[in-house]
Image 1 (cartoon, helix red, strand yellow):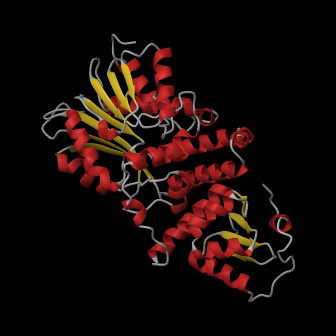
Image 2: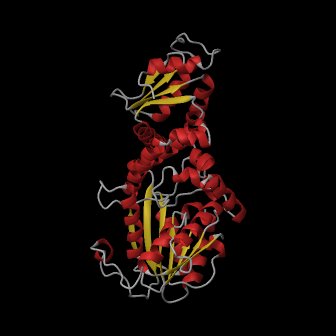
Image 3: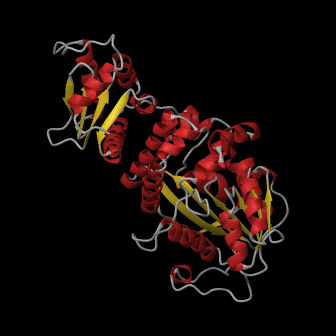
Length: 428
């Protein structure tokens, strides 16, 4: 991307011959709209440059990056609804960012958080309350996960894991960190050979296969993504685990049978608040009375709040990242589950996204060939924005371990799953 804001502004203006190319008067409509944006963002270390030469630096210190706005229509949309309209404008090339995109978005998110605290931010509370019934859940999955395994294979790790990794050290590779994440989950759940596990929302099957192969358990994994289930079944056959792992193309509400362990990684975000009671009932029915344990791994917030409007409308339809209180009150407490451990891995997700972004940029030309340039720019913004949200604390990544309150067969200390690993005997 260009480093010279003035040159970049000229290029953007050249795309639209009808736009004025001479500087506007200081108190023009464009200057007023830009001032309105500046008032909403406060003293963020950002600079905005318009197609006609008007610019505004919001902080007296050096800005971390600049946004170059191509036309008055875009400027007006940003003034009215910056959170939603910025994503569309960037995807369509009507806004360019010079400098560090992640740093720009971190500063933007902090400013929007402060704007909400002052009562000037726009709220979209209705998004969280939309019920993700079975039909809508399938449609949401198709818009994000079923856009093609070939796409995800280009930039995910070799096992196609599309959830937060766990980095034993900051220098660990993405492949090492994804293996470490799966093993951490298994150890927290204290898996033993011969146990029955139900996994809700299994992605491309990596965790289910890992649990069966390394810990000797049998797994029934549920997912409504046709593309992911087909891939997972093929992998199970190739690895000789078809008798130990069953992948079912079914919604979590259709989970039946009994199990010793319930696990869900990266699915709770797609359930919707109105369905938390249904999910809790499924877990309760699956584990039965008395014993049984489970783990929920999910993107969350430090307090109830909507996700970015552009993300929920363009990238992750129907998604909602809950606060811990909403999960406890909606999923676990009504069915008498006891919370055993909570861990926040948000910086691990920021590092995961850093790896994903680097891999995505390395294959951006191939992604554009599969889709188009707008798709590339939208996903570039989505990955960078997610990294920014986790690094500055707008998003959290929780692992919640739970069980029955009367079951004393629980870890005595965290050392059981953070200390040296003991590989179970007698398994593959």
